[in-house]
Each structure stands twice: as structure tokens, then as C-alpha cells.
Image (cartoon, rainbow, N blue to C red):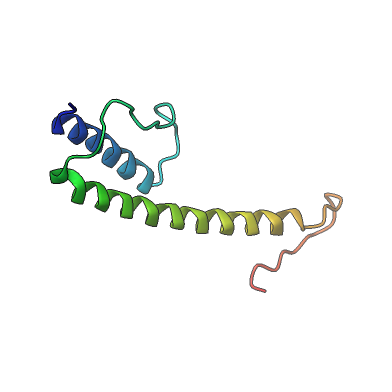
Length: 96
């Protein structure tokens, strides 16, 4: 039977990963996360902690999706700038 300490250790790592991502860090320091198969159901005493972490991750995911959309719009705007010869001035209207 899985020990609560195993789940606590996993939650520690997942919280550290959340802090890493929420700080805007993007470098990959470990392989993509995969759910462990050996832990079984989460112990009742850790359920509230896991649910808080899940809620925080969902909020971060939504925020990152918004940021990704903003970046995509900016990139489309940059790609829309005409490419002229280097002797022609180009003005980019960023306000409207």
C-alpha cells in the first residue's frame, strides 16, 4: 500500500514545478511529467493540498493561454509590416 510520504513527496515536486512555471521560467529541466502508477488513490489527509495545487495549475494554464494569444497577435502584427528596401522609412502604428 502506498505511503502518504510518497504522495507528499510527489506533491512537493509538483508544487516546485508550479513555482518554476509561475515565475515565468521556460527552460526544461526535466522530462515531461507522467502520473506515477504505483501510488494508488491519494490519502484523505493530502486531498485538500492536491486540490489547491490543481486549482493553482488550472489558473496558471488559463493565464499562459491568454499570454500565448497575445504573443500570437503581436507576431501577426509584426509579420504584417511591409518589407521595403532599406532606404525607405517604415512606420509601424502600434496604437491603432
